[in-house]
Image (cartoon, rainbow, N blue to C red; front, side, top):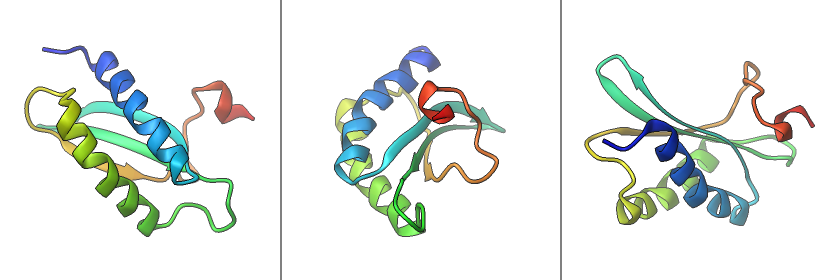
Length: 98
């Protein structure tokens, strides 16, 4: 089985240029167990007024899904979630503190 940290890093490498091409900031990538499910959570943000919308999340989801299918970084089933960080965002990277 591939390591969770490596999966998140591999997905980050795929997702970051895509997010930037849409004018988004890739905030975080997590691969975590939630209950019985494995969830790949991609969190995007923007400097644009109005922030990330549900349409932005859908756009990123639709664009990243075939790239993940092609790269196949995850063995087994998982749920893909694309969201905005929200007010309760966790600060973990130097970019987050800027």
